[in-house]
Length: 164
Ligand SMILES: Nc1ncnc2c1ncn2[C@@H]1O[C@H](COP(=O)(O)OP(=O)(O)OP(=O)(O)O)[C@@H](O)[C@H]1O
Ligand SMILES: [Mg+2]
Image 1 (cartoon, helix red, strand yellow):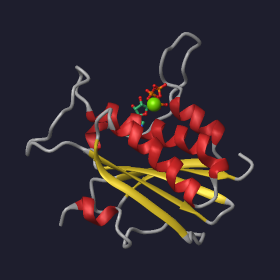
Image 2 (cartoon, protein in one colour):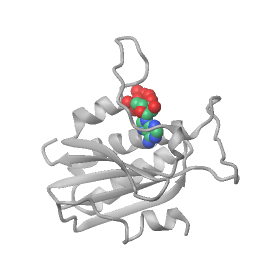
Image 3 (cartoon, protein in one colour):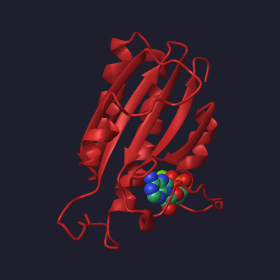
Image 4 (cartoon, protein in one colour):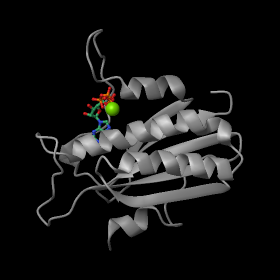
């Protein structure tokens, strides 16, 4: 079975502990720079349709940061798209869940494990990168990542509170 169809289907495991009556997913999208704008637009449209536009700025920023990380990890050392041995491009998915007081934003990818894992860095004053996940930590109530058991897929997520 293609992992893409499994991951973002209704059968995708919901995060434990909460009920999420609102759900929307986008993907699979090729892990290319052009995906970032789609990710942001998706967040804005879905949150507006749920009447939760107050979450839009933070959600867009976090989702596009997560997506940018996947896109970078998917690229080769020259920054160009890197295909696997079967000519396939890594892909990503976005999923938004809400109970109306919180929004959970998830970005999934099917990168091979050797492409790395989310790992916050301690950026020095003049470093031009390494702050994305730090910013996510400041904007969100909580964030983390996990692998989908049995698959080359992982989910990076952040939880937004109404007042965040
Ligand atoms: N989805 C991911 N898959 C693999 N590695 C990841 C993923 N997300 C983050 N990483 C790793 O975690 C590191 C830290 O990410 P972070 O977003 O904080 O910094 P950055 O992307 O390197 O720089 P910046 O976000 O400031 O442009 C990345 O350099 C990368 O090695
Ligand atoms: Mg980043």
